[in-house]
Length: 233
Image 1 (cartoon, rainbow, N blue to C red):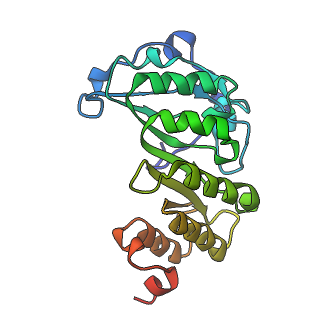
Image 2: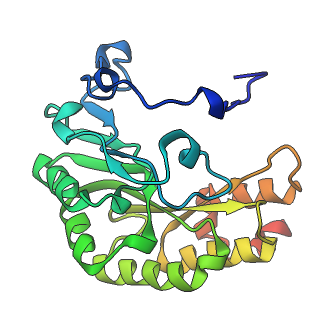
């Protein structure tokens, strides 16, 4: 950290030593955060290599298995996963089955790649006790792939913002217009998914993006149907 901002040095990046990657976490260090909650990675890496993301540099352009669930979970009621793209890992059916068998509530907090959701792995996801599932609609140019798959997930699972809480990350201020950002947000409204706008360049972003965030990240989003109406207030 430099002046409160993350600074990433690619030249310093090396894989974690085996004993570090596979050690059982010392949850006693943060008792309030880890009370009956397990945190960890089943996989690392992502084949996407998006320009706004440093997973490619930190973990590689391939999603690979790094652990079984038992390596960081021993019966806790809740599991929080930080995998960047678990569905891109060839062993993901086996890993999803481990989560099913745990019967714990699971939060995929870094997102599931909706472009890789199939009827087969959707059935596995439906069997997991989902506390929260996150998708990303960061690339507007992938609209023709992402939109129908989000619709299919909503239709086939019945999950929404209340049942099996679904949140969709929406990257703004990177390579899209405000109109394209609003399009993606309104799709979430239609599907009853909660949009989560993320400003890429906060320092130089137009103030309207902060207002867009406030509209979405507030209960008023479900009461005020359009950003235009909210922006007039």
